[in-house]
Image (cartoon, rainbow, N blue to C red):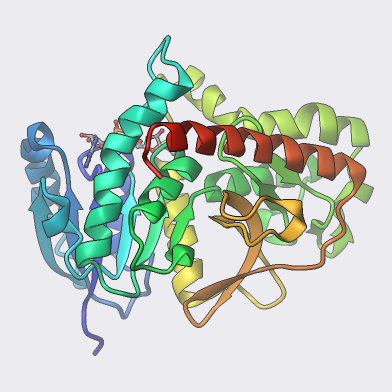
Amino acid sequence: TKQPVRVAVTGAAGQIGYSLLFRIASGDMLGKDQPVILQLLEITPALKALQGVVMELRDCAFPLLADIVTSDDPMVAFKDADYALLVGAMPRKAGMERGDLLSANGGIFKPQGEALNAVASRDVKVLVVGNPANTNALIAQQNAPDLDPKQFTAMVRLDHNRAISQLAEQTGQPVSAIKNITIWGNHSSTQYPDLSQATVNGQPALDLVEREWYEGTYIPTVAKRGAAIIEARGASSAASAASAAIDHMRDWALGTPEGEWVSMGIPSDGSYGVPEGLIYGFPVRCSGGQYEMVQGLDVSEFSRGKMDATAQELIEERDEVRKLGLV
Ligand code: NAX
């Protein structure tokens, strides 16, 4: 039997945590043969609520759950972590400027980056879920100089999954028929859900839907889905976000299916004209615990405009956190 691996989760007493932890512990993320030790980070006032979640985790009697550690200190929660899911963040409140939001999150992701740098496994795989996810990932990465920058990723997988499901619904096909959608750029309303390479049962998706629907309905529906969930549910996406985090980490660790790709927010190497260093949604394939950007895809003029616009937003966020001395 395999040795347990250490999975750190921040914001563990929050909404997403309440879905995520149970799925990690049941083996959905790393496989039904991989024991896990959960290392849960919360802020001090949430430790009591976290204790309740821990009681429930224990009550599930998950055979793969080898141990649970809780702490309000990232140096404890990240100790020897093989995987780190950074979920806890400071959400945007009404009237908050981008600078205020980034500054508040800098107060979280700078020390967490430093702690990962100091104590995590040298091979730690980091996924940032907490918003603004791409720039929070950049802050953590830039404060972890001893780790490979490629170890830091941001979640655009929820957008990717939403994009699959919307196309499946429109074409009347099962989600399993759909391949090779890409979410380019920022996990924000400027993201670009790109169907130019996507197929439905092997047929080009853009041959099956009207261009007008694609540009006028599909792209905004995917990009604004988070707001639609809040409007309907009175709370932001949680179970679907947790499921996407599971998908992101599982594919990174265990590989993507042959001939398919997924979308991950990863550091740009300058490919596709995306400024180097930005944490940007790209198409990736994974195998052997590594991801690799899918290269050589055609970029239409329409795509170019969308990809540049979302890059521009990330440049502005990076400039802001530079001004704040966070990166
Ligand atoms: P909740 O507010 O329910 O939970 C967040 C938890 O994080 C709280 O328990 C809080 O005490 C904790 N926390 C705050 N600061 C912390 C710190 N410094 N260290 C450890 N824990 C800390 O939010 P939830 O709905 O779970 O969402 C979490 C984050 O995910 C938010 O930033 C949200 O915007 C973001 N999302 C990102 C998505 C994505 O696709 N990338 C989609 C879903 C979600 O909106």
